[in-house]
Length: 328
Image 1 (cartoon, rainbow, N blue to C red):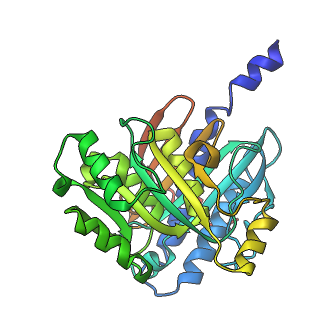
Image 2: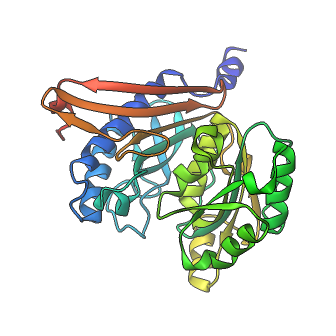
């Protein structure tokens, strides 16, 4: 009886604050290289800091979404085990979401981690994913990845009780999205283009102050799982489908256990069970302020969310002893 009760409790709530420390440390490390023009150096600094903090947690953690092959980082690779021992958990992470944004000191760079009960996060390969996402408060299935973009925009406008012209879609600014952008504008809606950082783009749909109503288009599959984890906590709807256009991409997906390359994943299929999501701003953005350093210390801005309770915490912290962020 005791074990059954424990199994239903999900992750320990103390891990939420622990994850905040993980993203804080990675964000501070990356921010020290903001505007320096070196994406890989900034990413490596975030990886080193995040790995050190994860290895201090009382968990038996397995990285299921990591740096992967694309960023050629030697640590926090898929399958790496972290922690000092404890409950088995899956970890999805992006130590620096927006390496280019950081290198150029542009908005919306984040350090991001999601943690879930073991075996509950989609093992997404390092390929692209077609995505659609909206915030909470709408009937289930109001938008669909397989529906024309214009139809999704119209359905969302009707559900919101507004004209189509008042709907804003967030889309990554890429040549591959030319037709999508034309279709959205063709029905009279607005398009908000972002250069990078589609995790922040998806999460923006949940916050009315951002002006973003819907996220559409193709971005990274690992980032899709992280975004789904966030929406599980904060509320919303999301669907995704892997983009595997050649044999190499299909082989990479198969290696991660994917059998149906055309499967349409729901939010719950990408991130089920009890989920904790944390993100700290590296540079200022729509969701979080970036790292601020003064002679008195370091200021951080973090969001921590948990799916089982629906709790969203926004933490503004001031760290007088900035030496604690040094690697040991």
